[in-house]
Image (cartoon, rainbow, N blue to C red; front, side, top):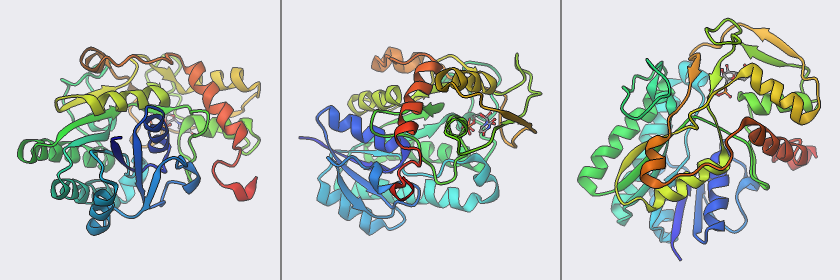
Length: 327
Ligand code: UDP
């Protein structure tokens, strides 16, 4: 049975992709330093290597021992705001450490790669929805670090014959039955709204109500984590290198997300209106025509309601996330 080497398999997206790979019959080797991820988020069916991508030897050893035939690379830092105050962390972890992984692959003869990229590589786009022909002009070190890695991939593809698929995520959200979103410092909208419904926060803050959008709040393209995982399984089987945007083609405003959470949870969810958050584009919506046409991606959860319901079910079961001590 084919083994997939999953970096960041203890994180939100990596844990659920690991679960879906295992459900599809693959073996999975998770490589994670647990800096952001959680031990309890690693599917017990996976083999776990605790290690750091900054340590080239440890990643190569794990790759060798696992005998993996492909790599899915989720391990990275992904907060725009943090990248604006600590760019070094983003270039070190997202670019330099990622290079160690690619070099270990070259040394071990592993030729397939699936990369977690981001719509943040596009910056503030001229039109919507964002497709793959549009220029990439990141406006923060996070987006820049992911774009740099996309470019590195092209060269490793050319020179070392690695076949890669880079998936540029829009807003990953929701949960599977077993695994969900639990960041030590939560900055994302849906988990923060659900914390209010769980009684762990008084109110949710809305960052900006004066945008040029119908209700004044920012619009994002929320994609269900299980649909996102499905795209990774298809990417693994792709026979040529490609870059794909992974959105749904539709957008939901911050206020609409909160309203949806009120319906799903039955909680009033008070809000506090705050100024805009630096670095937030008003609207980000992705076109997924290319991945639909070329890989046959067929998302199953097309509305925000399904996404919020799945997240709410997981958060109710795990009110303190993966931290058992508080439960
Ligand atoms: N947001 C908000 N309150 C929060 C968290 C986020 O109003 O507590 C807004 C944020 O400004 C953005 C949208 O919700 O417009 C989605 O933010 P998130 O951090 O979830 O994802 P991002 O789009 O930044 O990757």
